[in-house]
Amino acid sequence: MVYVPFMSLLFLQLPEKLLYSQGCNWIQQFSFGPEKYAGSKVYQKLRSCLELFKNEWVYFCASKEQMERNKMCRSFFSDDTRQNKVYEALKFIMLYLVIEAHENLKDEEQIPSFFHLLFSQDTCADPLSYMMNHLNMVGDTIGLEKGELCLVGYALELKIKVLHLTKYNTRNFEMIYPADHKREWHEITLMTDDNRYYNIPVIVK
Image 1 (cartoon, one colour):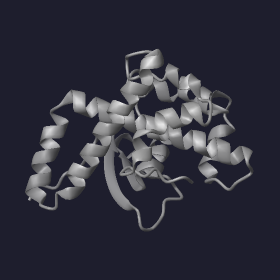
Image 2 (cartoon, rainbow, N blue to C red; image 1 turned 90 degrees about the horizontal axis):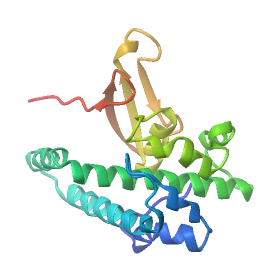
Image 3 (cartoon, rainbow, N blue to C red; image 1 turned 60 degrees about the vertical axis):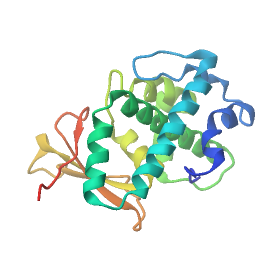
């Protein structure tokens, strides 16, 4: 699996890298939530989203005080524009991982079992079909399904524990994504009752 170096210059050049080195000109059909198909403007828009993502990442990582982080979180979650741009950047990173995994699969290199399952489906046999049939709808008409949660985990190197409130007292109440997470990854917990909107449980002290 290819790690995405958020702090490197390459990170901001990922859209152009996929276009010029791998011929993925179909990325022009990437949807920004309800905004459909930016065409040739997609690269500039993606670069803007990635730059904000990187800046927010550095900003939050630099903060060590809990009160300061709480203030930063309140500021972030009260700004829809910032949120949406960060979400679109994360969607693109997820797409990048799918493209890299598909290339590695063609080269008969080892990839996580999740991607074998992903590419075995008729609606996402390759990165383009995955983008058109799944990823483009995230943030518009659908929320995060199991596959997208796994990709978020791979992208951010996170173990994601989701509590499905409508499945309390069943074996599916608590689910972990991705199943093959690494031991050293940080863990976060989310709660949902519809797989579209997720809440972060907070303990008030």
